[in-house]
Amino acid sequence: MSKKHLVSRRTTLKGIGAAGASAVLGASTGYSQTGDSNPTEPPVPGSDMRRKIFEKVTATPLIDTHEHLIEENERLSGKSPRIHCDDWSFVLSHYLNSDMTAATMPADSYKQFFSDEVEPAKKWKLLEPYWPAIRHTGYGQAVTIAIRQLYGVDDLSAATVEKVQDQYQQVRKPGFYKRILQDMANIESCQVNCLYKPFEQSAMPTLLMQDLSILGMLQGPDFDQYAPPTGIKVKTLSDWHRVIDWWFEKYADYAVAVKSQNAYGRDIDYEQVRPEKAEPVFRKRLDRHSLTPPEQKALEDHLFWYAVKKATENNLPVKLHTGYYAGINYMPLGRLAKNPDSATDLCRMAPDTRFVFMHICYPYYEEMIAVAKAYANAYIDMCWSWIINPVAAKDFLKKYLVTAPANKILTFGGDYIPVEPVLGHAVIARRGIALALAELVEEQHLSLDDALKLTDAIMHENARRIFNLDEKMKNLRQAPWA
Ligand SMILES: [Zn+2]
Image (cartoon, rainbow, N blue to C red; front, side, top):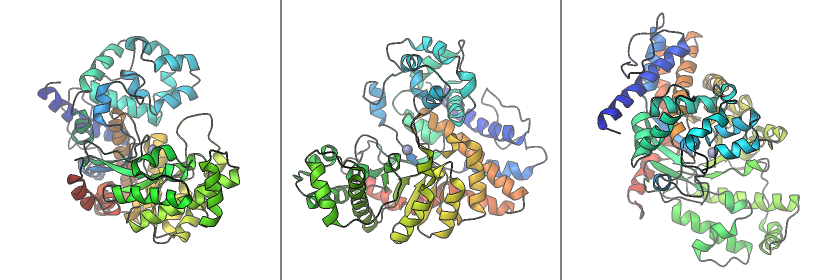
């Protein structure tokens, strides 16, 4: 892509910001496909206040506190276990694929759609019957915005699919992560939770900052993944403790937080279990025997608190998945409903630990506002929520800001494996943040000045402070792999 082309795309992004606002605000500023529109003009009719808020939100950088992005060089290699198909369907592979199945797309069509053996242009026919049903969901909107801004294509169709494929390849070039995330989405830095190893030594360490995953320390436990790099022969529970210690010694200075998505298999109701009780269960597991559900819970509970104690000693916040599950046809909603109650137990059990409860525990988000209000060590991260349900996320933010302290809310995490739809997600988030603030001003909960000041706090300042990013940035610049 030529430099001139790049510049015009960037201008287009800004234009879409304003257009997005005007669409939401009911104004007719006229969304320009040519990249000529400017978020600062023309003003939104009848609402100078809304225009000012939207301009401020558009100009304010986001710190993105949750992603699963694979490394750029892995994306560019085309072939990896993480990339089933290196064509335009990859942009839809996470999370819109779930809406495709929920919309009753047959398994065979789904398989073909994400196969690398089907010609990219032929894939449209497979999607076409379901596209009208899913294009307006948050997942659908994020993809549509990404395709519009990155590829200059307004909508997927038989007529545009070849251009989309061509542009997919044009965009997917060295440097595209920085271009999409920083230049186009105005994201200062991301926090990546690598899904296939405990910690990724990123080639872009200060753009793709990393969580240390504690998941395999407790779930399984994952002996194969965590033990070999340490050189420790694991024969007892205390050996495993030393393995956990090793990961913290090696990466605590570079990680922004620890992360666990153990809530995909159970509630977050971790009890304090003494090592004497956990030891025999641990040995049973080490001998590759299966555990009863109570045994498994006891072992996970013990190891959870061991890892959380290490995180707290190392001044690392503990990020926990709560609420909605990715994927489809398996989520037990009743289990999720218990997460907010269990979150309050965790906060009482470890008052010195900073817990970051992710995804607003959707759909139980009202409860999470109560958690943040009632516990000093409870933080709420809106990551993923803008695309699960953009309207709920806006309502959550409005309610949060008039209920709980504004210094404990994190407003954006794309939560994506492919980088392209992060751009669409960021647009939806900015739109929702601007709208939430504007409505609060109209309803006389905030002055315009209050709203403008809150923008910096909730979009980047909170994240910088909560995750000690200035210090982490310094450490990462000197990391052995930097
Ligand atoms: Zn995630």
